[in-house]
Image (cartoon, rainbow, N blue to C red; front, side, top):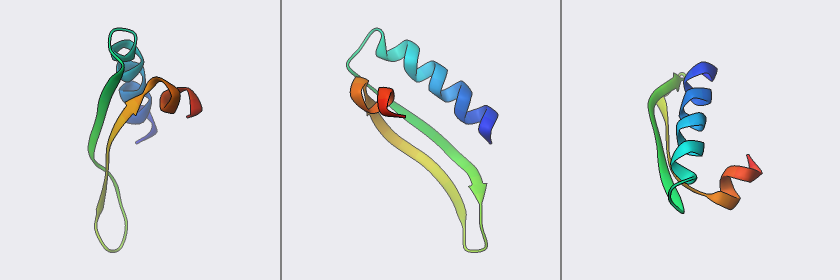
Length: 51
């Protein structure tokens, strides 16, 4: 899961060098007893830098 997040972060960084906002969508990144978990978020420059 961490490797997928790192790859998505690198792609987001590249996209943010060209635009002001990008989306990060990682379905089924992990699961718990109740359900699978997803990452689906919009990122701007400030949000990305705060991560």
